Every structure is written in C-alpha cells, then in structure tokens.
Image (cartoon, rainbow, N blue to C red; front, side, top):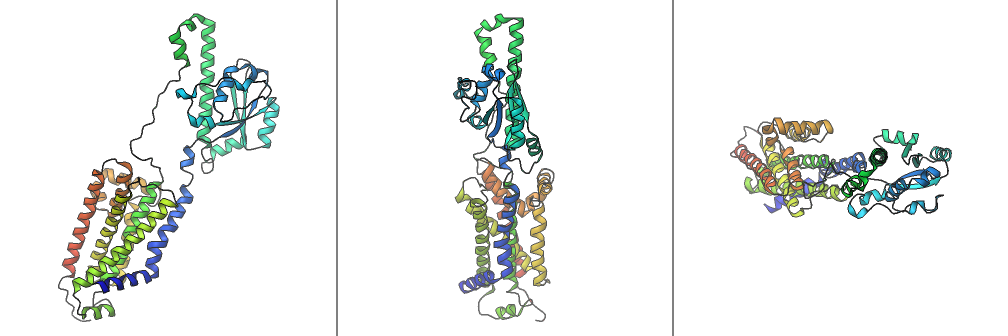
Length: 426
C-alpha cells in the first residue's frame, strides 16, 4: 500500500495540468482579487486632507472656529497671520468629543485672502479646497474641481470621500450650533446662566455606537477569497478521480496491469486515496497561506482549527472525486470533465464570480437552504465563515458534520460501485 502511496504522489505531482490548476491557478486568481479589492478597505478609512485657510480679519476674530480646526490637526497651524490665533485651547480630546483619528483629518496652509486660496487650489491639486470665516464667525468650506472629480471616481478616492464627509459634517454642526447660540443671545440671554443648559449646549449628541459582533474585524472582500479556496478544494477531486481510474482495467493499460497485481484492490485504492488527500491538502494549505500572508486576508486567528477545516475540506473533495471515479461505463476523460464542471458550476452558488454570484449565494441560503446544504463549495466556504464570524464553535461543528456526512455517503457509494467489478472484455 505504501508503495502505491508514493507512486501516486509522484504521478500527481508530475501531472502539469493538476499542478497548474491546484497550485498556480488559486495564487494567480487571488493575486487578481488583491488588485481588484485592494482599496475597498481604504474607502472607509480617514485620511489627512490638505486645505488652505484664509487667515484674514474675520478668521482671526473667530476664536471658536480656530479651536475646532486646531483639534482636527496633528500639528496645528501656528503664526499664520493672526499672531497666536491657532494656539488657542483645543477642545478636550480626552473626553471623546474628538476621536484620535480626527486629529489627523486636516493639514492646513495659511493664505491671506480668498483670491490667493483659489489660485493655490487650482495650481496644486493636492490642496483639496479652502476654509474661510464670515463676519458672523461661521465657516465656509470650498472644494476644488479636482477634489469633486476625485469624489465621483469610486475607484481612486481611497477614503477621501469619507474624510470629506466628516469635515463637511463637522463644519455644518459648528455653524448650526453657532447660529443657535446667536439666536438665543438675541432672544433670551438669561438661559446661559443655567449651568445645565450650558453644558448640554456644549455636548455633542451621539446617535450611533460602534459595537463588534465578532471576535475579529472582517472585511467585505474576504468572502471572495473564501469562495476561491472552496473551489480550490473541490478542484482537487481530480487527484482522487485520476487515482481511481488508474485502478480500473477497462480504462487504461495501467489499470489492466494493476488488476493482475498481487496487491489487493483495497490496498491500491487506500494508498491512492491517502496520496490524493495529501496532495489536495497541500494545495489548499499553500493557497491559504498565500491568501493570508500576501493578500492580507484574515481567518479569525484560529489556526489549529483552520488547519482541521482545510484537512476536512480536502477529505470531502477526495471522497467526492473517488465517487466520480468509480462511476461505471464512463471514460477517464468524461470523469475528469465532470469534476471540472462540478467545481465551476457549484462555485457560482458559493459567490466566486462577483457580486451577482455572491447575492445568489445569499439568496440560496435564505430561500433554498436544502440546496445550500448539499453544495460542498458552500459548506466549505461556511467553514471559513464559522471561524471568522462566530465566537462559538457550534456553527463550525455543524458545518463539519455536514461535510463528514457527505464524505461518508460518497465513500459508501464508491465502495458499492467498485466492489466486485467484472468486465466482459478488456
């Protein structure tokens, strides 16, 4: 049996097409995914924006506005024409009103008037716009044409849109609060003697709260990588299918010779199955390591359990490949074609081929759960979801049970097909 194991290993690793599709293809496709999805996470990150600030008389008098801008800079602007205007006390960042990320929101460059600011943003597209103050102490935010074009370009703004929305919201809130305070002073200035009212006026209401439902921070693109790994596992069915075909006397001259060998058919099949399982496991482990360390895709940090998941995925794939290889009255080429077609078609329902396929996968799990359960690519994908999204191991064990049931059923049917085979002629 062990000689069969070693010989099957050599045959599998010498087969150029198998080596390409099971080792090279996942790496090539994941590299393409990295190029396509590389900036998805950056869209939601806060990036520092360069802005010009018109340091005229209105701006120098707007103490509150200067303090707000001061709080949005890592290195606050100083001595830009207002003396120490920008050195006023910043809002209390320790209280949580200004997050640490917002301290890097702005990088300001002082100019003397609006005309100079317009000239600067037209000449230097790295300057996103300019900020100036009105006579009433309110802030105006002007965006350059280049920045507007960048916001409309979804493929290249790399978080600029999110950062700009934050700045726009902060300026809008400041102006609304300043107008409210002015109106109250004009109508009933006595309310400011109430300490509770004054405190509530200074507080920033919080309508949302960031919570984590998982033990790990997931990203949107990981689903496509998981579907790719599921397809890689299922494509390894070809190892087992080829191994079984090599033992059948009606399919090749090698099968004729092996049918006359003194080694029992069980030992031949067991040695070939173990070798195919090892090859499949190595291929999916290599793909997983590349996806994690090169493509920076997370798997939840549970590496021992992840290795078990990869071994289980390759075991199920080899059991299914053994079943296909044992089907009677089919040539080797037809059986290999079936394994390839199954891998490609079932990967549609696990979401590999883009957003439409991912939506189809979600729809299938909601509306046709029975089909999702019997789809091995979906269940292998679910193994990765279970490790990433859930604190409990219960979902992982449930998915593992489904895959083990598939494995047992496939091997049972394979045994029935392969047991007591007889041939009319060779």
